[in-house]
Amino acid sequence: MNCAQHYLGAWWYKSCHHSNLFGMYFGGTFSSSLDNKGMVWRHWRGGLYSYKSIKMMVRPKCRCA
Image 1 (cartoon, helix red, strand yellow):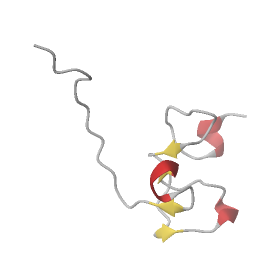
Image 2 (cartoon, rainbow, N blue to C red; image 1 turned 120 degrees about the vertical axis):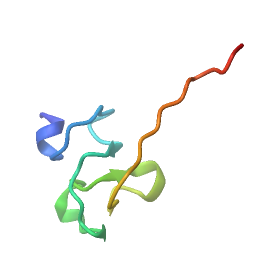
Image 3 (cartoon, rainbow, N blue to C red; image 1 turned 180 degrees about the vertical axis):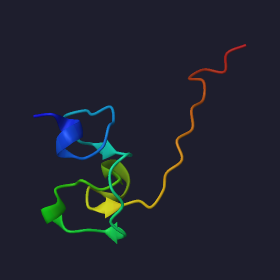
Image 4 (tube, helix red, strand yellow; image 1 turned 120 degrees about the horizontal axis):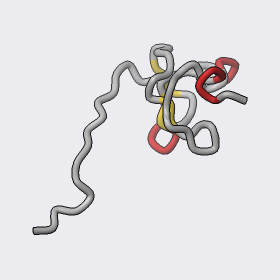
């Protein structure tokens, strides 16, 4: 299975779906019949809550001097 095609969003998938930050927006909580195709982050609000927007920020792993 091609995870990007199945979940309608390009992303770095682990086990095919733990987050989908480029998925579709379904207006918050959505039906399981949509098969997690929304913009989701499972470890925060679960796989059936679609975010309207996200902001991805990157920082150094270590601030070692």
